[in-house]
Image (cartoon, rainbow, N blue to C red; front, side, top):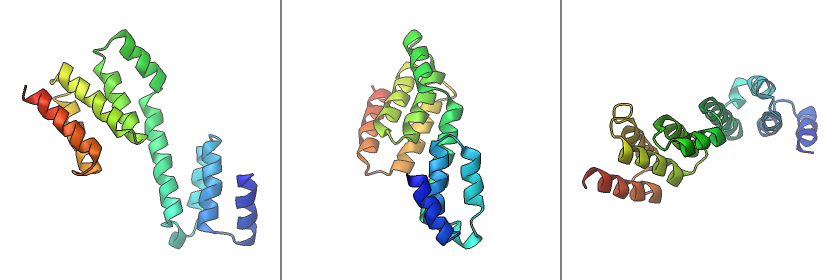
Length: 155
């Protein structure tokens, strides 16, 4: 399997950044976050900025942030029971953004803006503007959500 292959590479070339990141990813996928971090932390400083290592650290950070937001299924159940549960909808938007589903992230935030502009001091609109900045002005998700936001604000 992949873990054995990465282990074999590391036996022949200890500190190989790509193999270390690959093995750490195997640990992460098995739910052993601590071991994955330990492995990445064992790399020499000059290899810690390797693209494979950086990408995995970002994925691990996102997975941690998503886990703190809660279970998407239970958030969906909360919304089904109460469509005005803006906290659940907001957290679902953050989870969607972290998973790369820009359209769903925007739709959740737009729905909050439509239902309650005052939620967290216009927090949904402000978060959407942050997403636009991250996505860039030419991204189709930005263009579509900007148009929908304008329609909501200036109706």
